[in-house]
Image (cartoon, rainbow, N blue to C red):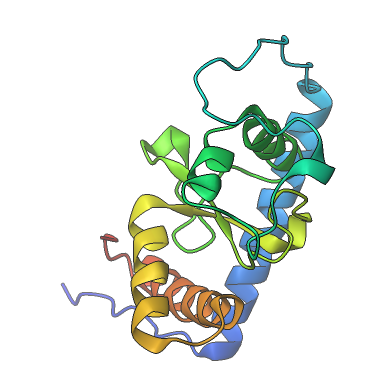
Length: 173
């Protein structure tokens, strides 16, 4: 019996595969949103943080931050609420490998830009798993370029690698 060879797919077929995958993810998100409307989180006072930024006008900007201000903001109730708002509108999956909590991955919300920290628009945030989040920051430290450019270039390159691996049936990571 002759084994059937897998046909290699070119860039056009890869683009079609990615477009179908994204459309499928979007329709699944819409169905889940209709079936499970977001419930407001119960109010719990934040007592574990040194500084609690409840008023966005009082959040220090990166140029005026003192020692520990960024770390305090990342532990604050304001940041937790911001993450909840982001994930209510976007899937909680890594933008590179498409793995999420269901796959056992911890998802981080990566800042593409720190200029508006404390009042971040959705466009300045990107969900990444721990592995890819660390890799983006390592690449940024090595390159010294703008964080947004480094992140977007890394995500595009790595997402293409992951898509190719999935097309050819290889296990990722």
